[in-house]
Image (cartoon, rainbow, N blue to C red; front, side):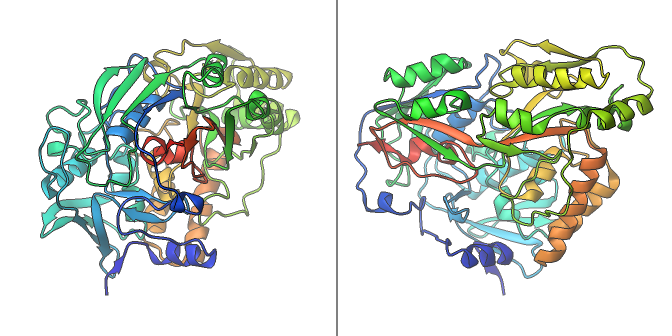
Length: 517
């Protein structure tokens, strides 16, 4: 018999914690927000860090923080996610799998209209997914989509046929790149046309995005504002000041060092949520001198993770362990030992590496993550104490994600995590993934990923993911000193705020779900 909505293991997990909840349409809101009647009207202004002049609204190529929130404003996805982690219908009314999890069918909602007046069809959905899974694409979702062998229109929807079984396939559809576009975005993918609750009216990359309410949106329960703006404010002090002055209604990435003070300010609230997000330094394992495993291990032992959490995150986070996975993920294997800071081991591995003593350049910018420059300087101090000639080069914020990240062999980076381990590993560590920012390529790892994807037994899946984590821990180019908590600030006039554990700004749904009190 086909299974619908949630894969069995995930369903059992949610039921065991007593937090499963589904809605027939739209997004599920718990508690008080369910009882409140949203008010309509007003112009909602969101102040965000992470915008550059090179940002694009092509969902496939989108890497910017501010521009990604624009995708949520003008776009809809096949599925949405509730605050409890459950999958919810969106442009797909329902979904079901074959018994072997190799064939998934998504029934497409009828009566949905794009902002250009074109009705949504199964063809638009199929072409969107095909564009992101084509071998020629540069989509950031490609790593997650590679296991799809065939995408075809069928009956009332779209069918995906997989090369190997995948019990978590619907969760891959949550990837923020997979905005459904007219004709799949084949002709003009950056035009900002979608089916979302807000219609794009102005685009200034790195500066601002403006939207108007799309009155013909299929879901009348979301998108309560008459208009919506996203304003890029990269400077932390300026962003906090803008919220305190009432110039914006919400901001992301409140600096940890001032979070408590901001929360005590009149008219302002602060929301802190646990997260799989991680502040990292990444080495290209195929580029000298980082193709030397002993040198990589030297740098991993030379970083003081607890100091980073204390001084960079002000305690709003937890120590990392050189993998992208923490306990917030299902099937987390806690048997991997914590790598401890050790000047002695760092010096020993550096000596074994045979490095010639030339400067090892780490490129950073606070555009990568709040406090990245300070974190790099702390890293430099401890590495130098181990005899490692680490040199910090500060890069301009504008262009960092297009000119430094994934191009320079050693730099600061940031990952917000993904809904499942499979997706996180597939997007960032699979040998063929375009966003493999450590250039990590390991055949054993790839084989384990495919095996874990097909496994439905929870214990065996945990074991497989654990083996993958150990390979990356030992051989990879990831230095993960810390997992951050998400710290958002918002005005007390903003109603409908719901915490999404593992995500900032209501998982990007902030303009869809909130309203003015």
